[in-house]
Image (cartoon, rainbow, N blue to C red; front, side, top):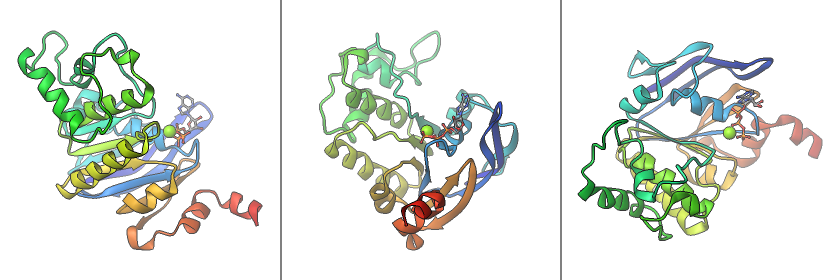
Length: 243
Ligand SMILES: Nc1ncnc2c1ncn2[C@@H]1O[C@H](COP(=O)(O)OP(=O)(O)OP(=O)(O)O)[C@@H](O)[C@H]1O
Ligand SMILES: [Mg+2]
């Protein structure tokens, strides 16, 4: 469904992503695993049009969309929850969830339906109650994270990208998001999941791609996943130092 081909992105002297090639399938939870600074968020930003690659292709059903605008990526069915939780602080929860659905000049969703649509996007997964009328900037970080996840889901994405998107959530909300990820993948959505946590990697992933220093080390299927081996693929020098 989605083919990342020899994708590279450099920031000055830093090669954030180095000729990365990854095949991703509809209906899978595909985890991207790597140490801090290994290029995960750079890949996420390239897959959402926030930044353009220096070289390489992003092929969606064969068509190259690398370097397209964020709205073009959204129009192709991508929805991304970024690592930094970005809410519009002075707008309420409903407006924040529908942010991507509203046009620049006019609201496309009728006023009468806004609260219902936003509320049902949230209630698909949020265990914690989030007041729809509250200003997003007044919410605790965990509730803001629920809002940005709901913002991605309300678009009914074909490709959902979650960059450490459950990091601030409590256990019940996190488990509920994971349950929803499994359901979405079961319905044919490609879920691209970025995490540091090995327990999450092991319980959720259909396949795992390991990044190290911007390079793809390998992609492994679920049946080949083993925490010690994944750690050594991520950071072989740390394993050496520990032993
Ligand atoms: N805007 C930027 N300007 C300069 N360097 C950047 C920029 N964004 C990322 N980098 C560098 O590119 C490399 C990859 O960063 P990236 O954010 O993709 O890593 P990551 O795997 O998401 O890390 P983390 O686990 O900490 O989120 C790092 O060395 C980082 O410092
Ligand atoms: Mg990151």
